Length: 198
Image (cartoon, rainbow, N blue to C red):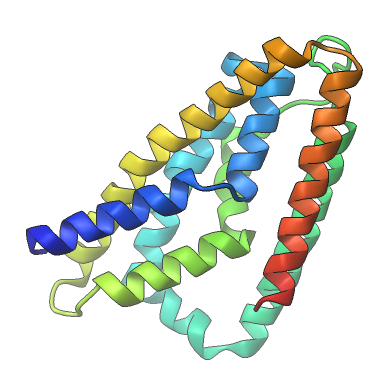
């Protein structure tokens, strides 16, 4: 991959992983609700799960996805349902000490969420179509995955840190609950937008 193309890829990776979306809203909410240490597995699941997904899609899974309207529709609605469930979990979460029955996403749950996240599919298929030239698909897929790994490690930790900083302002009472409800509603809006925009 030529240096200008690689720089464009890195720019795309950073722009898409740092902007608000389902993953980043959930990471900020988890950081605010549960703190840094408990949210690390969630953040690592996002940071490692998406590069694995984009690697596999760049190798050819994306072509199957693009050819099957039924698969795209089914995946969109499964993603919508999962995002509604996660929005409900976010909206009803209190402070970790006050409500011990809730917990942040585990590593494997956050990694698996990438496969039903409509934004992740759009990003993965778009970047694969743009940056895989067909001559060295394994190398191209690996370069794309590493670019998203670097971007994802930095963005996921930053969004958690943002949530932790918000936690200091919100405390553990009504303001934290209001923040969680707001983030849950934003996730619902994001889910609706992604389903309606497909």
